[in-house]
Image (cartoon, rainbow, N blue to C red):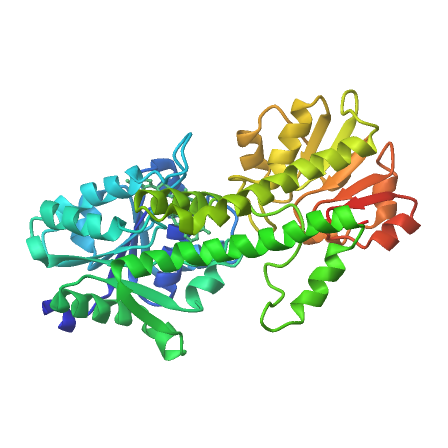
Length: 450
Ligand code: NAD
């Protein structure tokens, strides 16, 4: 109840990766005083120096603006964060556990365990990480047990829907704000009031604000990702059928997209989804449903995952067939390493997966990506890397387009032709115009097209 009248101006953001660094800089941009915290001291040093440790369009500018204003600061000290914040956003990672489908909750638990005992005054802790349903209830109990102020520490769940590559826009202009609130009415009212204050600029702009109980709010996030993954795998399943029927999935997709009930977004056929979210989120969702005795409800997600992985295998098969059945002694130019354009994220990247598989099958693979080179080198140190698209294609018997960066989409077949050994291209993202490439003397292959 005290919180109803409190002015909520001091925010902490715990975990400053893709989600947390974006959230921190955007909240500072809205006028709040923000303290970002991470256990990674090198990351914090870079952020404090105005050097964003990953690629995200528009974020370096917001980071530097926040630092210059004095409203955005960074620390590795939980004591400082606990003392500073009225509202603490938890944005730490929830990766897939090694060898299991379930999410690794150790980072979220560690963040609560570190913060809670230091909360010497009433505070609102807001989870933003993507978590298995039931986590908020569990963490609320943990918080109540560990926080000295007892019921002064309240937990809310506020899942995040931002897209890498559009993270600042999505944070400042979300489609909706979802807030999971505790069962206790007074605590819920205080938490809702505080979050309405934090998100006031968005609410003034008409953003829907949906309050729910904890489990519903957690499920909104994972069900949204399950739907999006399903939509991508749906069109990729149609691509498999098109391949068998000698039909063109790009035409099929275009025609489907004009149906308002279907819509064209996430309906692009190609190499499928990857990244730090969709794959691990649908797997964690299946694992959690199993724990809850509802595994039958999500068996279709296993198909969604398998359709997605089959596209990578198909991509390798098309390239190998073009080379007469073997990669041994052959040079392969790979364009793209990030899991999608406008990102440097290579977590579960379809492009790197394909590159690594071809390397393992004896191909001499050279990869180029406009932003993800450092991450790609770290993830796949045995691959070779080029300085440019042209460099990666030098001497290639086949070129593979695996991430649809604009610079690859806009590539002219003539320029590349001078570099390659043979004019073979496989378009893993249906990003090129086949007629243009064929007219320039290339053998063009793509997923889901004759
Ligand atoms: P990330 O790996 O980029 O960042 C996680 C950060 O948390 C790292 O900097 C790490 O050092 C830090 N951390 C780990 N343990 C900590 C602790 N105990 N205390 C403080 N910091 C700690 O991950 P991300 O992509 O930002 O994802 C974070 C969460 O947000 C995940 O649950 C993810 O599913 C979710 N999410 C991500 C996106 C996205 O597009 N990346 C979108 C929506 C939701």
